[in-house]
Image 1 (spheres, rainbow, N blue to C red):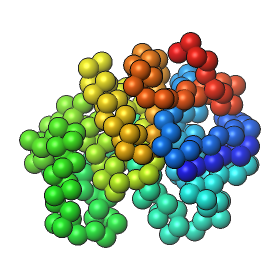
Image 2 (tube, rainbow, N blue to C red):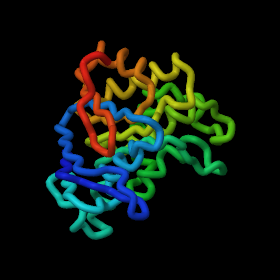
Image 3 (cartoon, one colour):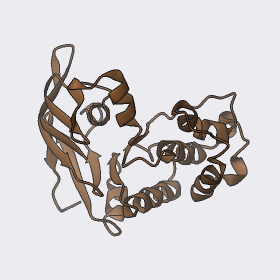
Image 4 (cartoon, rainbow, N blue to C red):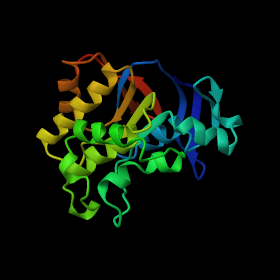
Length: 225
């Protein structure tokens, strides 16, 4: 799905990532760990084309990201769902409309997609919050809504940046269960997280590869996790 070959990225001349080679196979499940500031969010942005590497090559769905024009990048991103660490919503729109925004932006007839939206809201247990405004949502509801919005276009890859960072343990496991279900449907999953406990729980249910950013490189973590 996505392949990085000797990728480096620098902020203001300071190297944050260097010599990163990584391949995300279809249907694979990955955790990305590392200390704050190590570059987890930056690596995720490289994976979906929000950033261009300082050097090296990134191929997404067999296309070189560096040579894509804006339309090609926009089309590529429809196949990648992103759950941001700080999920933003339009506070004046009810939750159902916020979640369906990717459909609107992509030119779909939202009315014709109502059955799919209803099914998605049931999947994340937010059916009774369809008309709620974002400021009325709890942290767990916001995260589930962010996941629903990320997958509404049925992407092939789902990237989640600290999706359980602002919720309690029970909600963390609930979100993890949803991501594991997506993986069992054939989606490639990458979760950036500090929570090693969450990784241990996941490895009981799914074959997960754990990657750690250390000294600007991405390394395969040991089996002790």
